[in-house]
Image 1 (spheres, one colour):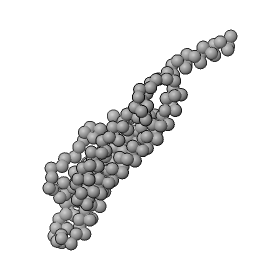
Image 2 (image 1 turned 180 degrees about the vertical axis):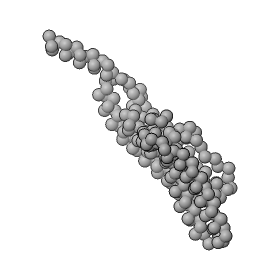
Image 3 (image 1 turned 90 degrees about the vertical axis):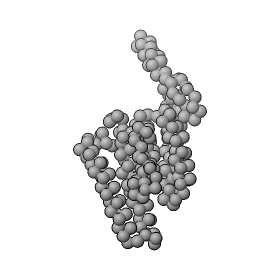
Length: 210
């Protein structure tokens, strides 16, 4: 009798374990037992690491190109980030794993746009405006972290400009003062979140606050 009951329970649980997912490699919609889904998730996790790495490389390459005045390459990198970012969102991943990669990749994208925006604030020459978290399809946590990183990257660009022999001492002082003003405003903005619980701000727990 016990054997019959156990068999019935197993069959019932197996039936409840039938699920559907998108295959990470082929993009096809799959159906089957949870075991098959978990096997497929191995490929999705590997793909997530690759896509995050691709986005990070494109972001850094684009920033370097921008610092060197290569606007064409910087724009190419900006456009190229869209594809791996979209693919990352489609992967069938455990939520905690997805949050990790989504947060890191999103932060890299925000940093890239943030550098272009802050550069315009410091040096003018274009009408660049910072995009919101919604515009960039990132969480607000990744957006905040990316903004902070953008200030650091912009300071490196500033140092390169200040070493230029073409700038007068007066121009160097004015540029430093302008950067300090901009950086202080960013710090003041970020300071609004100092009293938020870590679970709300931590970029690896993004959905807690959304």
